[in-house]
Length: 91
Image 1 (cartoon, rainbow, N blue to C red):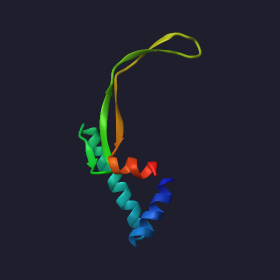
Image 2: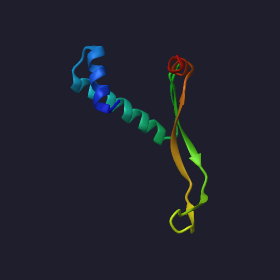
Image 3: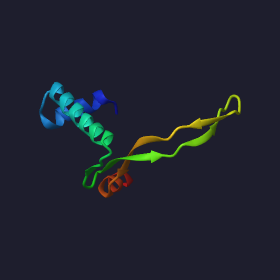
């Protein structure tokens, strides 16, 4: 499902315009991103939790040349599905 498809579904399910649904979805994504940038978690009971994980610096290999390269440490977003979401997908 694309973002545009999600906006259409949100609009039809809630009885609002596509523009309002787009603004709501954008607000949701912006707020989740903002909280993750601050290093905080965002949890939705039963659905899941967005959080930030830290990856250590490591040495990798360039697949074309075989030369060693240093991969710097970084922070990455992580989503852990909640119990109800996992059960819904399994059925």
